Length: 140
Ligand code: CMP
Image 1 (cartoon, rainbow, N blue to C red):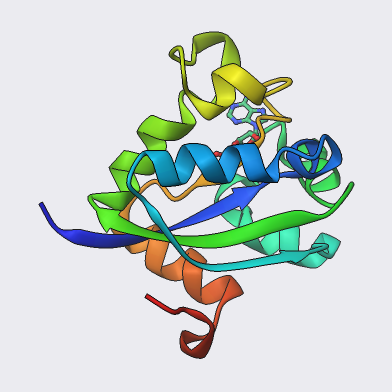
Image 2: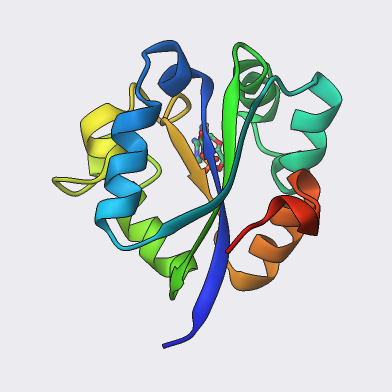
């Protein structure tokens, strides 16, 4: 077990439906600590840069448009094995495949409007955290 940090994004479908508190409760109930958090509106350029790894995918343009359709809440989560733990708490990308009790099972509207993003590896977590936060904003 190692203490890790991961990046979480509450997406526009979650902020629009006033679900940020309910999602934070799931995060904290799972033992993850929210050590940085801010609400912002992504620019098109920021969304494209953040999701650049998906640039060749058919859903890329729709995904970027969706991510700028309303505010998001970006967070740094810390805990034992935080990257894998948060992926468990989120559930599968497609809510139709998400396990009972997960954020996406309870709240996601579709595979695109799936309420939350979480980093998929420790290396990507470090890059994604640096994309949104400076060290002075992260208070463990
Ligand atoms: P996320 O974990 O943020 O990573 C990429 C996002 O693309 C994903 O969640 C979904 O919101 C979105 N997406 C839309 N369509 C698909 C798809 N067919 N497969 C995977 N991700 C998709």
